[in-house]
Amino acid sequence: MTDRWAGYLVDYHRAHAGITEDLLGDTIDHRGRTPYQWVVDAVPAEATTVLDLACGSAPLARLLPGRRVVGVDLSAAELACAGGRGVLLARAGATALPLAAGIAGAVVASMALMLVKPLEDVLAEVARVLQVGGVLVATVPIRDVGSVPFAAILSVLGQAGIGYPERLDAGVAARFETSGLTLRSDESALFGRAVRGPDDAERVVRSFYAPGAGPDRVAAAVALLQARVRSAPVEVSYRIRRLVATK
Ligand SMILES: C[S@@+](CC[C@H](N)C(=O)[O-])C[C@H]1O[C@@H](n2cnc3c(N)ncnc32)[C@H](O)[C@@H]1O
Image (tube, rainbow, N blue to C red):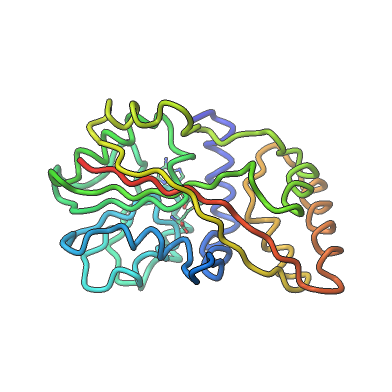
């Protein structure tokens, strides 16, 4: 990861701990599923120990009742939000997981693989902690296929066309294979929510990573969405990709 992203992510999650869950927790697809439910749907019933990689505030934990869930994240502020949810928590980076080899029946990584570099090292760590036959379920955002207000917001933030640290594009199956994982499915789904009122508009804008956008640009993007929601709620949509792999 570039130093710019590394420092940005630490500061961002210190200032906005829990924001991903705030945003996605009430975002649903046409079947009424949240992106978190979509992740959990692919976790095998026989996986008794589940590693939540880059767990953030650990929104997946309550969707995995009866499992032993271990949450790992770099952000102390996010882990503080995750406390009290019945999750064993550890502050660590994705390239050096504090878990024994072969301990997990499943690894879940919600909205995180696009942030971790080098991806092959992270996937190799995932493969190390997974049991043979264990499953990785990962979601990542697809930033360039959003709803109309998002295109305008990203433009104001100066983020249009700026990618995440890790691109999971063509060749991703081979990169999984190199790390000891076989990609079984790679699909996308559309999730949406209504943005209601100025506070919600601000939350939605601040949920975008925007390294390089100073406070003025962020304030301008907030004002833009607030103006749009003044008279009526605005529907926004997120296209999210789910990758499922096995060891
Ligand atoms: C977009 S949030 C997703 C949080 C949570 N999984 C969710 O979906 O609500 C990304 C998370 O990845 C964590 N993170 C970023 N880089 C990391 C790394 N190299 N190792 C571990 N965690 C990392 C951040 O601290 C943050 O909590």
